[in-house]
Image (cartoon, rainbow, N blue to C red; front, top):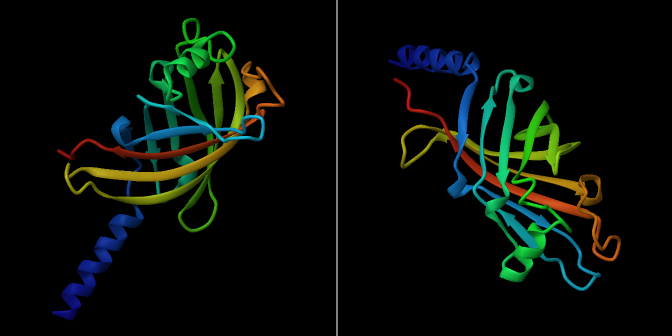
Length: 192
């Protein structure tokens, strides 16, 4: 009996060790992209980028083969008050009528310790593209308990200079550096 269990465990481990990369679709309901900055040193307001769309490929055996591609439709941008939403979407900042979305596409994924990744990619806002580095904590790779499909979840942070993207109004009184905080879930299609 022990031999049977040992052989089964070895086969399971071998299968996991040679698992193929999995492509996941981001779940916008369980994804938050929050930007936060200093406002004259008096407060630290934030804005939420909702309606996130995208995919990620994760290969636990060859992390460098992993990738992520995300679109942030500015229709989902929320500064938590109607007046501030209008200001964020104006030409002073995102000019959402002319540039309706921001995008991020990874160029490199690296292991950065147990459960940690460093994801380098190109962030594009207002047709301006600059490199950004995300520090990622992998929360879990498992079967989604309700959907019964493969799922992945992670948190990430990055610092960006808003003036690099033509969003520098009122800097430096309103901080040029913005902290991005991301949490996301993504699921893969059910295996057939």
